[in-house]
Length: 220
Image (cartoon, rainbow, N blue to C red; front, side, top):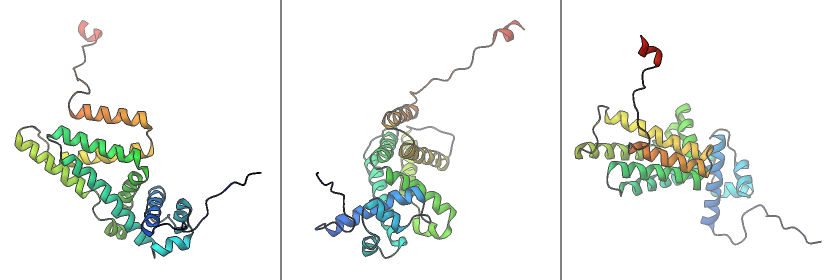
């Protein structure tokens, strides 16, 4: 009878140090995203990465250092999405690009999307963790503020709302989409959400009309 080979725990033989470290960080991103900072353990990360706990400790002496590594990785992913959107011309093109980037992040890297949302929530509840997380939404907020300001100066956008209020509204929209796709949506549902949101921004999703008077009201 042919023997079944199971993956061995521990540091993979011959693996490069940076590859193993990245493997740990990706696994930790999923654990932190699902459990939050305080409930996550090195043992859970080790199980997710198919490594031993001592192997995790070899690269990260404590949970805070591991969390910081995950933060750095996710900040890089989010920053890249924003920089790609900056290359677009026009407000709608920029917003559509960043919405697609956040949605794609949720589809292709659900651990990163879930971690980003959980990190922001954890930071609001824990003052010490807030110092560690910092302003994870900062680059996205700055991008939205710049895009809205430039659109108003060009005459592309006319609004009675303040830039600050519009920025926070769009920020909530982006992070909400990322969370939905990472935690709830499947590929078809996610594609529909993205398409409808882009159409909404371009004022092509629907037309609002005043309702017709009811028959009873016409007879009065």
